[in-house]
Image (tube, rainbow, N blue to C red; front, side):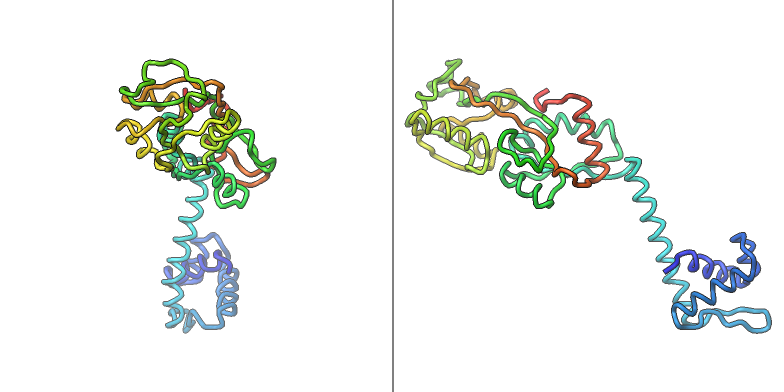
Length: 294
């Protein structure tokens, strides 16, 4: 359907005249008549009755007038919306990330980014890094935070974080006064951990297996607030990043030996076209040389 013919039809209906519609549209009257005739042929109905140089909309014409006004308004709104997204006056970024990143690291980054682009909004969903990678490869999401090192070659990365995993205990724990612990000291120790769809848990399990250490895992959950509360209440120790201790005053950080490195990045599938808003987020992160702990 040619929207221009609908515009011409509406002009004729409003002006009640082919010649006046032509003047309004800067068209010759014959061109206006031809456009209306072609529209009637396309629809298979008569839209305008012509009698003694006067015109009158038929029943079908009146119905078409109402529908055409609605359609052209929607087309105008669509065009404006796309234009707005193109110049980033409107739009939404969408990113999926693990709960620790979403809770402790992402807020400061998104605050700065959204302040730089006040027309944008953000949607953040939570999942483990394994699931996020699968969703990226299946093109169910555009952006997701994953762990560097285990990722597929089909993904391109914008680096975010390079830290060491630490042990976290409450202030009354017997280890609270120590600065460093050997992994062997965790044998039979009560712990509250993420489930194994999180990289941080898998890396911890590998280190324990290597050194034949068997912690007493009292709880497994991906619900970070629950982990924090269980550690604070004394159920056991957990593992995480130093930012957790910085923001949770009742948690005490302890370095682990051997070290467990954690490098994470925002990933997208290679050669996939993503939204302008998400492209801008990636470019902004890269240009600022960000790590999420800054």
